[in-house]
Figure 1 (cartoon, rainbow, N blue to C red):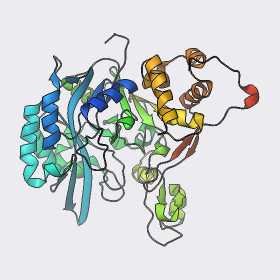
Figure 2 (figure 1 turned 90 degrees about the vertical axis):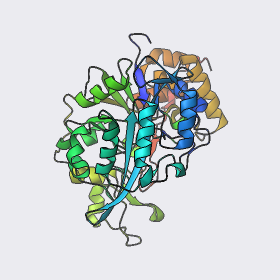
Figure 3 (figure 1 turned 180 degrees about the vertical axis):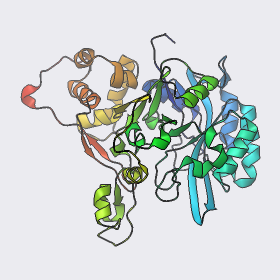
Figure 4 (figure 1 turned 180 degrees about the horizontal axis):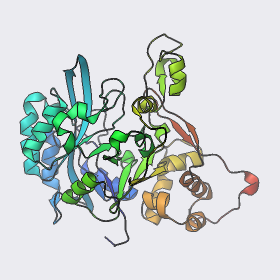
Amino acid sequence: MDSDQKYYADFHIHSKYSMATSKQMELPFIAKEAKAKGINLVGTGDFTNPGWLYLLEEALKETQREGIYRFEEVDFILTSEVCNIYNEGGQTKKIHSLIMLPNFEMVRSFNKSVRKFGKLEADGRPILSFSLRDLAESLFSVYEDAILIPAHLWTPWFGLFGSQSGFDSIEEAFGNYREKIYAVETGLSSDPPMNWLLSSLDNITLISNSDAHSPANIGREANCFKEEIDYSSLLNILKNQDTNIFDYTVEFFPQEGKYHYDGHRKCNVTFHPYDSKKHNNICPECGRPLTLGVLHRVYDLADRDKAKSEGRVGYKRLVPLREIIADSLRVGSKTRAVEESYIKLTTYFGNEFRILLDLPEKILLSCAEEKIARSVIKVRNENVEIKPGYDGVYGQILIPEENPAKVVTQQSLF
């Protein structure tokens, strides 16, 4: 790796052993997509599942860097997401957490310690019937420097701060283990400025990951480091919120996430939180409670009017390249035309992140198809139109069309 090259990591994905996940979520397809995206380090996901763990142990090769394994020129780190479902304070809690460990021996020890609390074979993301404190105790008993991260922090049903079954603070959830929670995952429906409204997260590092269930979604959110990392350096970066190494997170526009605004999908009702409160958080069509989204919950817990960004890891909002191509061509994102254009662009320029983040505008405009090039530039400048997502419905990020009178035709390699 060159000294001036960035190191991108996506720590949270799933394998084919998780429910509602593509059968292509196998190592060859994962590695291929990671290289196309520009992702250098990928979380394995699902190490609690015996079938996936067997495949990982067979295929991944150890490296000289602690906790880093290798498959087809892509780095991997051992990760898994678990779901804790339990009763506390008269309420059912349903919380997802991301776990990282440095080697297979520790993974097997952890799996053995939690097996009696859930059927690990049933899903890549197992349901464990004990509390978050018990999860922390089991994990840190295996390895005191294990990494435990609340996943998609604000998702209504399964986020630690979720409106439906979450907590109001990390302390409330983890008790004495609060001091070992160094980072949280923002999720698709929130971004750093939203989280910076909470002073309780000032000493918490914010990370962003794809939570991919299919290869195409790998890297839709990610983390950019200024140099290669291993397990120990990652732990220190998260502990210290080290901006000297951790450069920025790659973010969705949070409005594109499917739980950003409040709403009721069945009634096609969507509200900004201020409008929801005018309706007492009740759907005006059917009279049932609205699903309160991430923005609403952030406002409820925020203790600032303005985000405090000093000393925090930066961020960049992006739209995935396939979506940009589809919008430019006015076709569906899963069409052959989009995939052919995507392969041509990533093959010529190296990878998706280079196109979206680093390629000079002059080169982009002279070498790529003009509509696509101009759309990439608009997204970089956040010149987009937004229709926020709600109640499980993804939002839409629309790229405004050029004024035909101002368009200057460029030669294209494609």
